[in-house]
Amino acid sequence: MSKIVMMVAGGLIVAILAAVAYLELAPRGQYLSPAMLNVEGASLGGPFELTQHTGERITSDALIDRPTLIYFGYTFCPDICPIDVQVMADAVIVLEEKGIEVRPAFVTIDPARDTAEELAAYVEAMHPRMVGLTGSDEDIRAAADAYKVYYQRVDVEDSAAEYLMNHTGFTYLMMPETGIVAAFRNGFPPEQIAEDIEAVLSAL
Image (cartoon, rainbow, N blue to C red; front, side):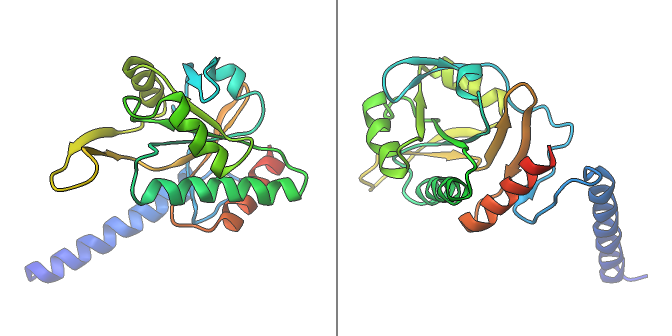
């Protein structure tokens, strides 16, 4: 058998096994969507204490006292973050129109630049109920580690920004006591995210 044929056959086998694994791991009877990640059994989330954009400290328990969407990013992000955060905010608005209240929260992974004051202007422009969260390097690292969020500073030359931040970009739907119930990929419209959230919450 030629190497090309073997590679194609191997790729098909991997694809089939991946599909089977997905179907086996997918929660039985739970709503599934292309925008959603399968988080069944995932160890995501955990206790943290951060500083709100109002300057007050808040714990994860106090923040997640209702369905809460959490996104990790930074205000100086030139491309992905503003889009993702706006989608999150717009999805919350769609849900509000249906009588479903979900709290949007933005956690910075760039606390050196994202002060409470900087976050206040950012989140208030996105949604009046959005909570912006910052803290010390240790505070942010603890929260990011709990949510398995990768981030790293990247120095850049010939740019208005001294540095950028590489990071993962998922939106997490958290519930009091039970923790994570869904995670969303970027690149989907707010109407899809809102529909998925409504379906997930109705299934709980």
